[in-house]
Length: 413
Image (cartoon, rainbow, N blue to C red; front, side, top):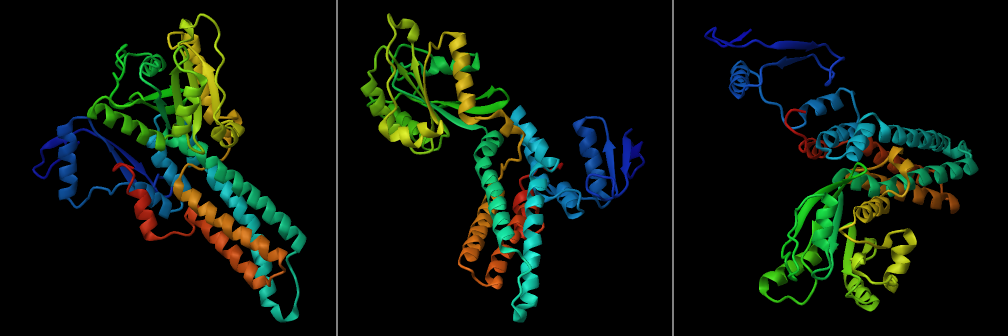
């Protein structure tokens, strides 16, 4: 029983004692489990602070765990991602990273670089004798091998970030194309107003759709046309702004109303390099005969379609099987290979930037070997590459970096 200074009982609690180093933080720790009354919790916190305790800062427990070697920086970031995860894919990715998925890959890369960096440093110690301890042929092979693996990690960020943040997906098209009907069908609920009146959706509507464990942030937008009033014009402008930051554009059109040329003109205005595109020819149930789907605009064919980033599908938004097929197409635009979901994957922009800097220094080291530069110049590039790899796991850190990372945690972790 915990009592206040006047010996008045507050609650009967359970005390769990964790001895260092077998605790979350690596320190001696006590956890107090009380009844979930807001009054009891507030009274206990008031009592403890009066007796000299203080409230933890955001992420402070995980920061202490990092300082005591219980986890590295990628694993600490994964704790925050695990708490914030909103889908199975985000949960699984964060859990793998928390268990060292990225850390082990970075450690392997560092080991390979450290071995050859040590050989180069040894050459510098015997500079006057003009000897080579690092076999240059094996050195080149190692640099190619490490650079290739780093390249794969850098490419993994697109999928990792999509899993972590959710896939920003915009539904756009002309009025009465069936965007709102399609949104409701995907969500399996009446979220958007459906009407035969053009321009019914004047603002954006945002919802989260889970497809095979991956979260898609669906945004239904105002129809694209010459605005009839100022409010509708604002809605159209917001549509264009949403598309400019989207990862996927679902362009919906009524295949009974628009020609292939109309569709191509719309897409030429809306699309940009790197945007995933799903063209949805809607209302096939109203077609008396099969219609030929339009081809992709010339500007998209090379940049998007070649990379599997653009597809065209004919559906009826009222057909459950068609909607399921469309959802599968959305998923496979992002997840090309299911096995990639089990591979080490970057999800943090901080990690990505550090790896890019590592890649740049390795490229300079390879160029130095090609030009037969002296060992000291090549060794410097390797030291910089190792420095940036160390930034990822926290072996090289700055206080302001740690403050930035852990300030995004919740108070209790």
